Length: 166
Image 1 (cartoon, rainbow, N blue to C red):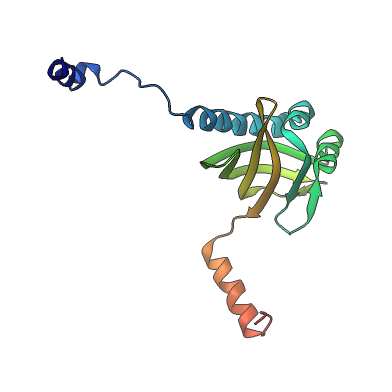
Image 2 (cartoon, helix red, strand yellow; image 1 turned 90 degrees about the vertical axis):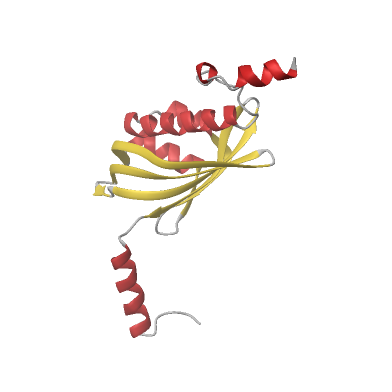
């Protein structure tokens, strides 16, 4: 029997069959789908989805280092202070640590905050926890992506004028 089993599993005709997903594959796909829904929610101003997904203790650090919480993010979405015309998350990676998930990616956005254009590519990290059968974001961090040459020039200028800390 073992010999027949080996021959059957090696058949090219069976290579298209899908094997059962590992324990982490389903949560990873769920988180990727949730990130896609969050992209759409940004564009549509979907306060209900943010209300559901952002944990009560949610805090985010924006590209200039300011920290704000869930209430501020919901208020900015409700008021239209944060207006997103397009948002697409790319280069997403998902990793798991105990009961938490870390989602990293880049968001390519066309957006305005309080009327100021903030369009660009942003690297982000979302920390999710699973509660009551659903994933919630407890923390987020976003950094503005800049071309390497700009970073090098800024570093050179900081060093030139001795503005770096030692």
